[in-house]
Image (cartoon, rainbow, N blue to C red; front, side):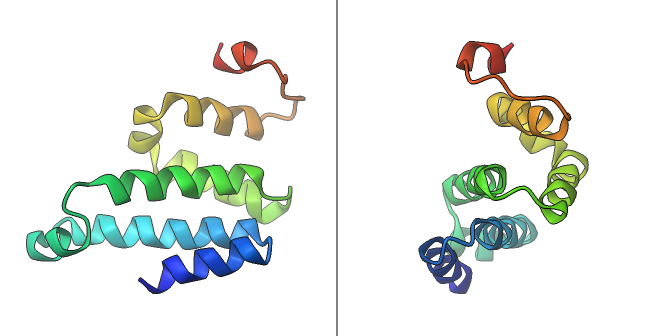
Length: 113
């Protein structure tokens, strides 16, 4: 896939926000293809690519530099992908913590609470 090559390029160039947007495009395309059973069998028969592309989208978004575009995308993640965030509770908590204007604790147990 073209976007997988873009991800590799953006990671090499340390453009993590663009890598996150590429993973978002991959995830959205796999979701659109889910209505076409022949296409989804060719692209992602097990569903693993869909799950990992969403996780990578959010994780690369979280570790990218803090910009207004990043905040806009995090708000978009909360609004557009609530089901996916329900399936990934730790990622959901990290997104919520990043959107609050408080300092995040470094202790993992405090993040999970």
